[in-house]
Image 1 (cartoon, helix red, strand yellow):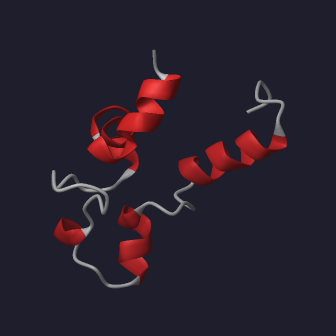
Image 2: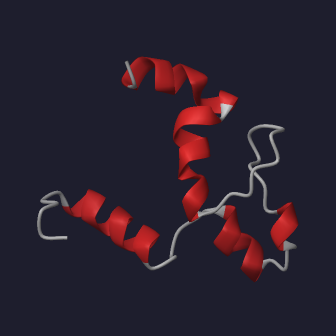
Length: 73
C-alpha cells in the first residue's frame, strides 16, 4: 500500500481489498438479494458482479466499450 502515493487510489484499493465497495456482491448481501441475482446491471451476460468479475467489467462488458476503446489501446 505504501507504493500508491495518491490517497484517493490507496483508499479505493483498500476498500476493494476489505470488501467495503459498491459491487453488487456486497450491496446485494445487505439488501437480501439472492447471490445468483447479483449480476451485472449493465449487460445481459448474467455475470455475477463480484471482486473476481472485474475482468468482466474492465474487458468484456459491452456497456464500457467506449471507455475501453479510449483507454485500452
